Length: 443
Image (cartoon, rainbow, N blue to C red; front, top):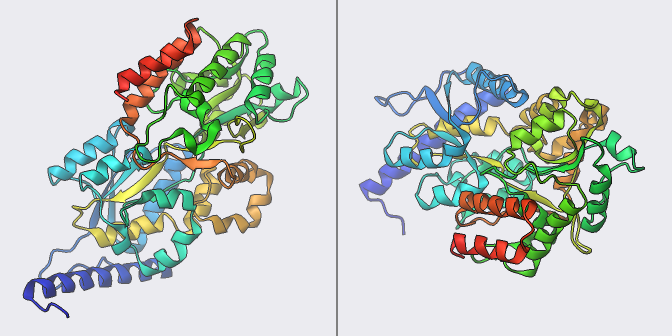
């Protein structure tokens, strides 16, 4: 039975109006037609702008910022909708957004790290995209994206965000010229052999492997543990068994790297930026690095030929496939409080079109969100070799994501980095070090 009460009818009519506005805008965008944005029914105020919170600047000069600006300019020209970018410190995006939602001042779209999605979802900050995305996008774009990413954004049947720039996140960058010195083309993909090779790569002032040990957004110890696969996370709680056999073996592997001279005891407070700068100066043969910074690493290379830079998955333990832990990575969500959902969703979808995916790939060396564009002949050229390598890593059997709910993620990284510093810089047995971490986290 249909409820025809005035309230239900009003809500249904509002929903139809939103669909009509979005459909008109999407049709104009697809056709490349400039169209003043369609407001609501007669008397309603026209929604002619949307606000976005992101860590990027619309006027920035990094490759992905330039692409971002180009997509904004194209959208504004076709839709006549103004896009206002309000840059935020990336470490504060999620907490500031939650506060802004509560205070009714949130932006329309927001960049979020996947490891903080549950925090925002639990506070009702994000709209359900299943009811906002166009039918064409749901039917054509979603199946064309990486399932391992898109499924993580579904909470209790609600799609709360779209993952952007699928990336292996923290992987291993290495110098091919350094590997050739010892007769190899790439690092070994098993930890026992990797430790041996990393030790051999230490030569003079060059160190075999650079690891960030003081960064609240990553943990090298978790990346070493990823060699055991998704079993490192408890599926019910998202916790890691920090005193279990897998954590102990990972810690002892780091200790072996130190013993072989592959990891330096003097670099106990290194941030990701420190590792990046020292890699550029030729200090490391290999390093844990943030995958989307590949072009930046090439650009600032001074101590080696940038053409020699390449990427590798993390080694595995036993017979498991090489590990690619997908996170933290960026997703984009629609605020539940947005008053301009139709325009915001139209821009959101525009960032995931096949044309946009090609632009992200060709101009910012990012892996396409739309997998189908990999059939473009450009991906067989030398210019696309790195992007193709990243795509292969994401498509491998060893790719997995953090659980939807990882408790105290920032605290986890901080605590494990303290443990990592103790593992590298002291001779204390790894078991009590890990036990202290577990106690500190209250696990």
